[in-house]
Image (cartoon, rainbow, N blue to C red; front, top):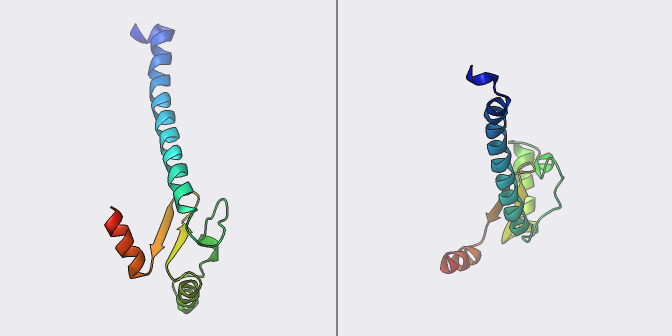
Length: 104
């Protein structure tokens, strides 16, 4: 039978694992590169696992006050991390948007 050959069995098992491992490494390198760019923006330091999620009080009055306070602290731009893999940049002022649109 065809599956009695150990080379074929190991090829069937290792090919998908190698494919997934390669894609995970490429994705993590992309996240790291985007993260280095996002970390140049002003903002609070992030937690290694939670990012900035542990600082946000929720979708209520306290969350609205949190957003107002951060808009006063960082009136032009602010970075935010939603967990360890999803960076986000908030642009709040039209001059920054204008410069961004002219450069792209």
